[in-house]
Structures are given as C-alpha cells and as structure tokens.
Length: 151
Image 1 (cartoon, one colour):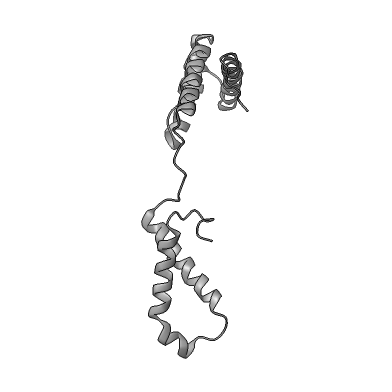
Image 2 (tube, rainbow, N blue to C red):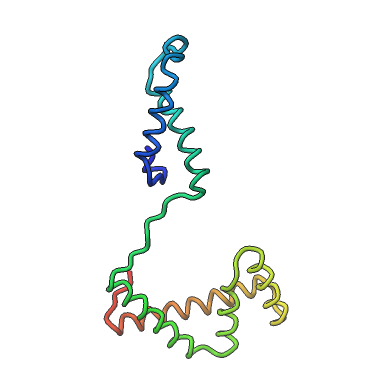
C-alpha cells in the first residue's frame, strides 16, 4: 500500500504504525470493537501523511545514467544544436525564449514575446508549436541517421 503511494521508506512507516498501535493497546482493548485491520490501515494512513509532510516530496526513481543513455542524450543534444542552425534567427530566438522560465515568469515572458512580435498569445503558441514540431522531426531524423531508434 505504501510503496504504491510513492513511499520509499515503507518499512519505516510500518514500524512507526505498529509502535503507535502497540503503545495504545491497553486503551484499545477496553474501548475498541470490530475488525483490527481497518484500524491499522487508518493509523498507517495518518503516519504516511506525517511522513509526507516531513519528507516534503514523493519518491521519484533516480534518473538512469548508464553510458548508453548518456551517449544517446549527448547525441540528441548535438542533433538539436544542428537542427537549430537550420532555423531562421527569429525562429531560434522565439523557441529559445518561449521555453525559458517557470510559472509566472514564463507567462510574463511569453506576453512580452507576443507584444514584441505584434501577435496574440495564441498566435505565438501556434508558432512555437510549429517550430518545435519541425525541430522534433529534424532531431528524430538526425538520431535515426546516426543509428539511434527513437520510439
């Protein structure tokens, strides 16, 4: 249950759960009626929520760093650099600026680009999408030409 929810320390959370239930065993025997499993699950859920708050993020598997993947990544970046050279300077500038920043800064930057080009935000989105699609096709062709199969 814990592993499926992204807990990378399920044994630790389970130990804390069992210790909490065991510490209240005397009190529970006097007042609790019914099946034991739902009580354990409820306590485990609360301990898991505490664990999330302490760890402040869910587990993500570490990125693969084997040599073949590293070589493919470097080749992909090389192909992207090559494909960017085929774009006009304006398109290179648009796509580079369009995908910078995060959150609010990204929105503000995109408004600024649209104003500078004298087009609407939606027209900018479409233009960036078309440039990106062209770049993706070029990168895939380059990777295929260099012996990499992209799925």
